[in-house]
Length: 113
Length: 113
Image (tube, rainbow over all chains, first blue to last red):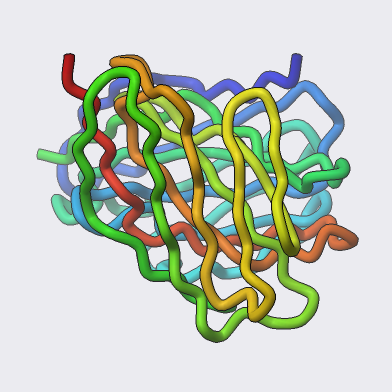
């Protein structure tokens, strides 16, 4: 089975802190994604990466950066966390199979105080 | 990216068939239609994908009319465990490995006993 794991299920940080959210997939997928999910807004794409050291902005990249130093790992970075970044963060990877489906991790519930 | 419109919520009872319709007026020739399911505190998971006419798998059926401007996800004989948010997406050409998707707000399906 494809497995996408995220470093934390729940995280509490303070305003101004630098926050790292880690995502690892074990299926050698090339493409990885970071979304945030908020009530009433669905999933919104923050950043995605189609190869090591490559990244593309999604729909809401402001306040975030990403790092893809190894194929299996895609990190989301909040340089200076703010309260409006309190959200559920979901990582996904895609294998390019017949259905081109995305495999999601369990999510990280981040609270910024 | 083609955007979609689907009902915010639906209610059903156990054992009934549920049909969730999605509008995607701006679907492109190469776009596929994909549905995902999301349970609380989990990432979305792939249900079904189609291009035209009808697709059926062990979980659901997908009906797509000839003009492809809408699609209907059909869940036969729902149970309480089918309570979830259902997302309709268009895009991600099957031949593409990039898989950039627009999730939207989804439809909250609640199944009652």
